Structure formats: C-alpha cells, structure tokens
Amino acid sequence: MTETKDTAARFVTAFNAHDEKTLNELHASDIKFSAPGGFKATNAHEATAYAKRWLKGFPNGKMTVRNEIVSAPWIVQEVTMEGTNTGPLEGPMGTVQPTHKHVVGKGVQILKVENGKITEARIYFDLLDQMTQLGLIPTPATV
Image (cartoon, rainbow, N blue to C red; front, side):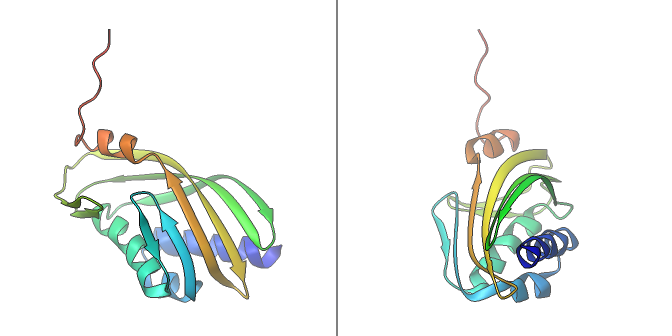
C-alpha cells in the first residue's frame, strides 16, 4: 500500500512542479491511459505528453488531492485542478487559444501502480464544465 500511495503522491508533486522528467519516469513504458475526449495512450511518452498539454495551457495549473482510497495496487483520487488559461490548450477539437480565464475543475484519477510505476491511469472530469468556464460554450440562460 505504501508504494501505491507514495508513487501517486510523487506524481502529483511532479505535476505541480511541471517536472516532465519525473512524470515520464513514473509512467510505465506500456501504460494503459485514458481520459475524456477519447484520449488514449499506450506508452510513457504519450501519457506524459497529455499532462504537458494541460500544463502548457495552464502554466500555473495545480492539482490538489481532496480524498483518496488505496487498495493496492490501485489508488482512486478525487482531485481539484485549478489554473488560468494563459497558453494554448490542445484538445480533441483542436488547439484553443488562451482565454485568460481562471478554471477550477473537479475530477477523479484512478491509478494502478506496479514496481513504482503507473501502469494504468483513467482520468474522469467534466469536459463540458471546463469548456463553459473557459467561455467556449455559452452558459445556459436562467429562467
């Protein structure tokens, strides 16, 4: 259980430090990774590239773990992602130019850790809410 929790904590620390080298080292070479928008990765480079896309779009972006459940080799983390979109953000519909809007999003990441490496990762978050906060989708009218 310690290895799982420690590896997940190292991932969050590396993400918040924008430490690409450590992120890549933590991803297994044959990781199975999926995220909203149909994103899938099957190697460490692709999984790290996904994190880099977010950090490029939100250079001050930070992840905060709110709650976690560990059942080794798995860990489930409820997270809050927060940052201001001051860089281009690559997504499933193409590249979005900076909106300069502050975004706070909630999500869940499920990680499987084996031998100190993340071998599986599934990320879930409300993509519609994120796009609305960025001003890319109109806010519904209130009645």
